[in-house]
Image (cartoon, rainbow, N blue to C red; front, top):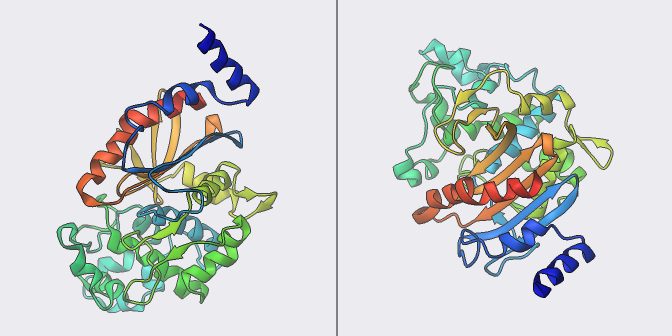
Length: 331
């Protein structure tokens, strides 16, 4: 009884979340788990949990995999707001004239929205031979020239190769490379100065996450704070509120085949309901998650090992075991 009272006293003294202190440190899904590198939970701008594991720390840059798509999605919204892109329904053919001469006229109907929804119908990489795609001298041109695999807009098929085009679109329309555009219009205003971003062999910064952007977990958290605050950060409107609303409430979406159960996908973000509460999230291979729960004003960030051997298992460990604990923490 005395030990339990002491725990309560410490929790009250340091204003620590009781659930986090009594459970997260000892949970079998987290404790001694060599795959987990970082875990941050924030509610109402108050940090409830901020932990680093296996030798990593707040300065570590993590391989964010397909969270790169979620960041590119924000950049597309900024580019639309600044007039570089007419709308999310702008045709790719207006940006890539090569499509106007393609014998398959369906390619002229493909929109930026369809690319962001994983429903462009464009050729995709072979997941069993990613090296083959990554070694192409011009991967973006290859995707545009290759035969369609689906009717544009009809089927959801996760497509890294097509999503990389978002970076090419940003570069061609803004006349700035994607990294420079991000630094000026997103990373700089968020105070993000330390990051790595690799280029594909076509000379464009990776837009899909196969080579990935690398950020600290604390900086990844800032994107969640930005979106939950309707595009504002430190009182400055960085992303138009209209675009933020569309990211949380896409008017066109598709059923996803992985992630949390019954997730839908639109504009490079996933959505599902947990115990009647709407959750929006970005996800990367190996269990990289940026989770936002608007009704709770809560954000969760986790970075994990990206090695293929246990990547799927790590994602499932988060969705099935860790997330329910974190939800209780912010509920």
